[in-house]
Length: 358
Length: 268
Image (cartoon, rainbow over all chains, first blue to last red; front, side, top):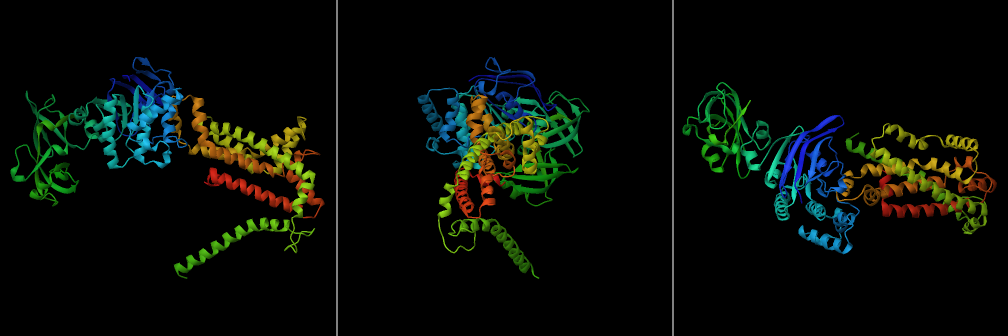
C-alpha cells in the first residue's frame, strides 16, 4: 500500500490532448473517485496509473517510486475492469491464482491465498466454476478478489458497479466500501455515476475536458461546489439569473427578471455584477401563495413526478424560467401540487443558495 | 391473392429451393457411396449386387496408397506452416498500427479468388526459374500459398472477437508480454487456429489444379493419382476410396465441431 501522486500529467493520443496537466495526490489508504462525463479523461487517467498509457508530460509516483517507463506488469497495481475481464478459459480459482503464479509465489501459498481471497468475497464455493457460469455480481467480486490477492499498492476500479442492476449495485456499494476500509488500500474509482462516487469515495475529483476542475469531500462538492459547472454536473439544480443591486458586510441582494429579490450570504460580489444563483430542489420549500414571505418566488405548477420517497414538482416562474422543487407526499395533497396551474410560493434557505459569476 | 396465401406460396417456393439445393449437394455423395458397394466391374446404378471388393482393391493399388501418404504429409506440413504464418500475420493485421492493412489483408486472401490454374502456372515457372521444380519443398511451398488464406481468415476473426481487456488484465496482474501471449492470447485463439488448420489441411489434401503443375514421377498426390486411375480404369475403386474419404472427413469435422465449434465459427 502506498500513496499516489500525479504531477502535471499530460497525455496526447492521436494528436489530441486528452489530459491537461492533471495534478492529484492521494494519501495512503485513501479512496478517491474520478468523476466526470464521458470523454473527460478519467479513464485515460486510470490507464496512465495502470501503465497502459505512458504520459508524455509530468510524473506519476506510487509511494516514492516514479513510474516513468515502468510497464504495467511491474507496477503492482490491482485493476478491476468495467467488464471484469475474467479469463473465460480458466476456472475462478485459476483466475484468482493467475497474478500469484506470475509472481512465482510457491504453489502451497498460492492455494492458501486464493482460498482466503475468495472467502473474503464470499465466493469460495465457486472456485471450480468458469466465469460464464457466474452471475454479474459474482463476476464482479471475483474480479475484485483477483485484483486484491496480489496485495497491490493501489487498487483501480473502472466503473466497478456500472454493469450491475440497481439492487445489486446498492449492496455491492456497501460491500466495496467496507472492504476498502478494512483493507485500508489506496483506491481510485473511475465513474460517471455520481451516486457511486458520492457514496464510495473519501474525496472525489470532478473532471471536465482533461482537467480536474475541483477536488474535495463528497458533501463539500455537492453542497458548496466551487463552480457552476460542478454544481450542474452533480445532482440537479435550479439556476436563476440576476444582478447584484446592493452589497453590505453580510452579503448582497440579487434581483432577477424572474421577479425575485433574494438576499444571499456567501460570496464577495460587486454591485451591478451579473450572477447566477443555484439551488438544489431538495433545499426548496413549497408553500401556499398566501404563506409567502418576502423572499419567496411565485410560481405555477407544470408537472408533478412521483419518485417514491419524494415527489418532484416542476414549476415555471413569472418569466417562464423552469424551476424544480422536491415535495413530501403530505404537501402534494395539501397544496394540490398534482394539478397543473396551481400557484405556489417557493422558499429558499439563503445558506443553500450558491452564487456564481455568470 | 391474400397475404396469408402469398406468404404460404412464398414458403413453398423457398422450401422447394432449399431442399433442391441440399439434394444437389448430397446426391452425388450418396451416389458415390452406393456405387462403391457395387459388385459389378462397371459403374452402374442402381447396383444389381453388393460387394466390398472395391474397398479391398484400394490397398492393392500401391500408387494411390503411396500418394495418399504424400498428400497427408504435404497437407500436415502446409497446414502447420500456413497456420503459424497466419498467426503472425493476423496479429500484425489486427493489433499493430501497420499502414496499409486492408491492402495486405486483400493480398493474403487473394489465393482464394485468383484462379488456381493461374497460381499453378505462376508457381511452376517460379520454381523452374530458381531450379527447385518438382521437389518436396516446392510442392510444400505451393500448398502453403494455396492454403494460407484460410487460417488468416479464421484467426483474424478470432482475434477481432477477443476482448483486449483480458490481455491488459493479465499484464496488470504481473504477466510479461510473452506470458500474456502464451496464457491468454493463444487460448483465446484456439478455435480460430484449429479451424484454420483443418481448413488448410483439407484444402491442401484434395487439391488438384495446383498440384498437377508441381508433381512429377514418384512425387505425386492422392487426387492426381485418383484422377490418373480413373482415366485408365473404369472400375469403382475410386468410388470406394471417395466413400472412405467422406467418412473420415465427416468424423474429423464432427469431432472438431463438437469440441471447438469450428463450423459455428466459420459462419459469422
